[in-house]
Image (tube, rainbow, N blue to C red; front, side):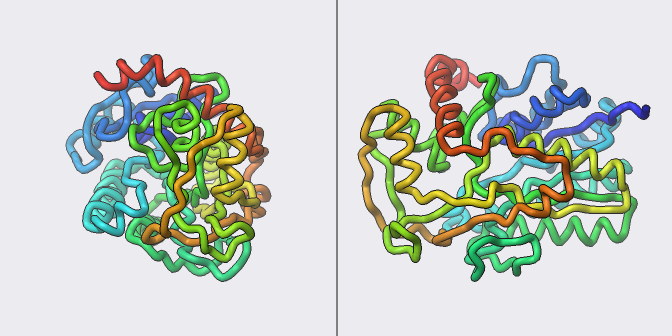
Length: 338
């Protein structure tokens, strides 16, 4: 059997990247990480994983990593992810998410790295006119974050037709939870992920939770999202890479979600139940660039990969997030030094 190639994980000290590093290790893949530690944490990367502190714009560093680690595949998580910030500072997002991705893709082609998994997003769909979006739903982003990711998807498609290179574009819905073994979790200060924000509030780390928009066309007027456990998402990356290697002339575009949604108020109610507390909720206006409802049709990923979600339950996601948040209180001094 052919040995597994080394996988370079960009943004591997961040939330989803660090969980995917663990999933790759658990599955026996050699891994290395590049992260500039602007939003990531050095403690999130296992000590036995080669780590390079730097930026994916540094083409000399990329070339050195590819050579030193004999990289055969890249999983690309590095980027900026806050939708309202993308509206107020679009050039940051076109730089971090599009221009830097172009540099990384070019480095892969130059080094003959043939396989590439891209951290894309359901935000590329904008405000879809269907209840559950398929991969063929028109991509009409309503914010620069979604557009910056769509532009990278387009680049990957063009490159795959011009070079011996295939890719998987995984369009995430709302990622939540933490590693069930407590090895990793969402650690970013000031994070905007709802479940992260809610568990912080429940544990007294925030005074309240803002509910942005109460007049959407949804059952309770608040935004509805399809939440996916970060460890299930990480597992999907490993399976997608196996599929790319098995069929090197095929590329994949896959929605990553569970196919059902929860409103903001439903999530907050679930956190209240889990902690036996009552989160202070502040009802506020809609944020720029937020759609009312975004739910996946995940039939393609279920048919294409041998992906079986193991944590497809809101209470489980919240429980793991709470466990990590309590652990993070002890890790905080380390995080602040990192």
